[in-house]
Length: 162
Image (tube, rainbow, N blue to C red; front, side):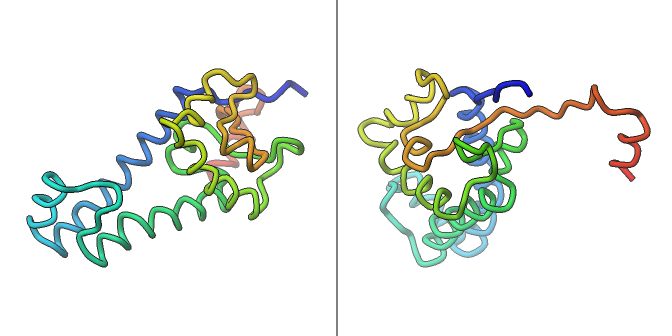
């Protein structure tokens, strides 16, 4: 068995960017339908992290993404961005999927990672196991696991597609 391949800072950053773009693509049209151009004008001129335009803004840009994040971590061990970047979140000792408590701790650890000046996220670049503060708190790792079909026979691959 080969040692785990830890996911580095830039691959994880790319996954976060992909997730952010996906949220904007999904939520912007809905918010525009609800609030019309007033929302866009407000967001450009006064939009800040803790400002909320209305109840739908709160639900669609704060609550729903958090619930989706936790659900993806629980069901897939990764967000869509991490899936596209061939990454998965695992327990740091067993390398198995994280527990629900680890998932919640990891999410809450994001707040610790963001203070001061996102140092806990940048820490991924220097850590030998590529763990951010949130990973250390939750005892999780993010592993790089590219699809490797080289050891499978053609028959096995055809069965997977069928």
